[in-house]
Length: 328
Image 1 (cartoon, one colour):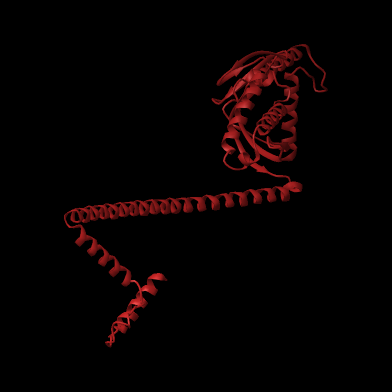
Image 2 (cartoon, rainbow, N blue to C red; image 1 turned 180 degrees about the vertical axis):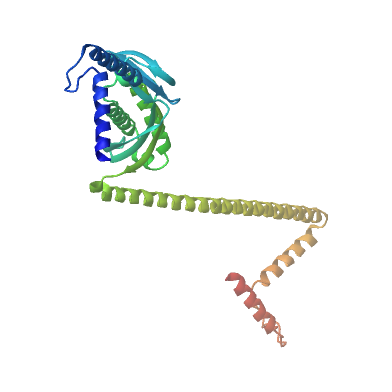
């Protein structure tokens, strides 16, 4: 069985050699040699045709170079190029690429040193410019991002960068970076710039913390002072209003008393004109009564009167107590 199998293999091998133009000892014949050349030519043409075919996907573009020089840009679909004469470079123009950049030891507007990290998301908007105007696109993007970052940080203050100004700073970096890339005809469109981290170098962080603490204490004292002002001013205004109202009331009281005294004097004057002597005596008695009602001393003429007098001691004490209380 083995001998028969080897015999069949040898027979098939010899027939193939004769078809290709060789004798059993690999010596070519005229007709067979031409057949070999024809078969090799067919194989070369088929191979050359196959390797020249390529497909561009919907999100891609292909740049074609002829003998190393830019020739054209083709879009999605099947295409063919004469290989070795033309070459292709397929680029995805819709995919967002990410690139992180660090700016270390940068000086802010208020002369503080910080380190900033940003993330840039971009895509290729013009394949020809991207491939032929930039020698090293990644390096160019890095240098442009660093330049835009330092420029914007140099015009910003530290507190603004670390608190409420992150979005605004990121937008300014975005605008500046796109302007730089457009000036290079880079064919890069910057989609998003995100400010990921803003931090202070470790060697000056302690000093910065002291500054922040002092600023916080300053703000705290400022708020306390404002609270005190907001409290004391209404109280002072209320006290001023109270004093003005009391003065106005006292003014009206004095006016009313003066008007009453004037009216009383007019009545007395009218009575005095009708009966001067009687009015004069009555005024004298009223005056003496008023005077004696304010004193605790009693004068007695003992030479003309030997009668026993009754003194209202209880009323005298009451009068003394009342006058003392009024004096106090």
